[in-house]
Image (cartoon, one colour):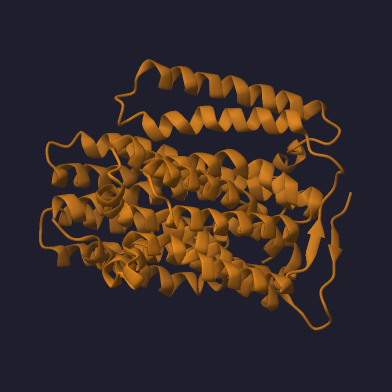
Amino acid sequence: MTTTVIAPAAGRTGANVLPALLTVTFLTALDFFIVNVAMPAIQLDLRAGPAALQWMVAGFGLALAAGLITGGRLGDLYGRRRVLTAGLIVFTAASVLCGVAPVAGALVAGRVLQGAGAALLMPQTLAILRTAVPAPEQPRAFARYALTLGLGAVFGQVVGGLLIKADLFGLDWRACFLINLPVGIAALVMLRSVPESRGSGTRLDLAGAALVTAALVALVLPLIQGREQGWPVWTWVSLGLAAVLFAAFVRLQRYRQQPLVDLRIFRGRSFGAGLVAVQAFWMGQASFFLVLALYLQTGRGLSALESGAVFMAVGAGYLLTSMRAHRIAARLGRASVALGAVVMAAGLGAMALAAGAGLGWLLPGLALEGLGMGLALAPLTTFALSAVPAEHTGAASGVLSTVNQTGNALGVALIGIVFYRGATITEGFRASMVALVVLELALALLANLLPRASASS
């Protein structure tokens, strides 16, 4: 089985693919975080209650996590550029629906549809980078991908705050969603430079898709809602059901001639170890962004825009190392991931010590956190996908993106418990930083399970 690639016009290289893919990546990463800034204005304008506000975030995350594996396989079957284009159209249209929503329920529905569109397009970006970019250029391409992903996350609050403060055309919070329309149209035009490629197989494993989607919903839903509801009985029942459904899914895939996920991709050490390390990484990052935002805005009284300005210290450090991460990884191999984790642990420890002091004392720790993020993220992605056969890249990218999202949800759930158990917000922040130090040191140890060098180094 081999991947079919419809070659682009003569003279096009991996560099021509990057603008479109990075634009799509930035758009989805930005939108995941920008909604947090818009929440107070949405609540006031649409008279949204706490449940509706929660589902504006949870609906997106749940639809995204549940659809990524199926989305990746659809790209293998029907063409990665085609599915990426379809996902971008759905995402952009859903953004418009969010931007014109007259009531909170319509906005929640738009966010769910946004998540479904993102589930189609996100695995394709990784798969196309793996198949369309020549192997020698892949470490640099993945470094730029990681840079874009991180900048979207770090600057989401800044962009959202600026859009709301500018109040373009009187749109207020709606500009945070409607801005996706011109950017999405531009990305659709740029996708013409992306070559088409397909993997193996001729039909979708519908039973497998249904099983894994149900399993992911059963896993992610209690992680999203469990803490705020006090972990009622249904959350534990749901987590137990998730384990049963995942076991049934794995058993089904073993006997399928055309499985949704070919289990042979887990035989290689790089993919399995990479998934564990990626989950540990995102458990730390998603919860860190949440806890820091709560500390700055609720504990220190900063506005969303002022909080976003503090986040720029993370962005500065991230920008510095992520642009060089592929060179550092080429020299250090898997040790670059361990180094990044240790640097993040040092930054988090510094922030724990600075909790309650002047905000300026947080800046060194924030910069170290960003430096470590930039060192670790791109090599992690490269290591995880480097040995996956090209015909299974779409499905593997879907699995990797799913682990990313479940890591986000699990980290927020666990670190959220630590944060809210603090007697004060400052104590909760300090305890959370200490817990995250432990998690980053665990990531440093997990890095030893990765291969010494990626296949494309």
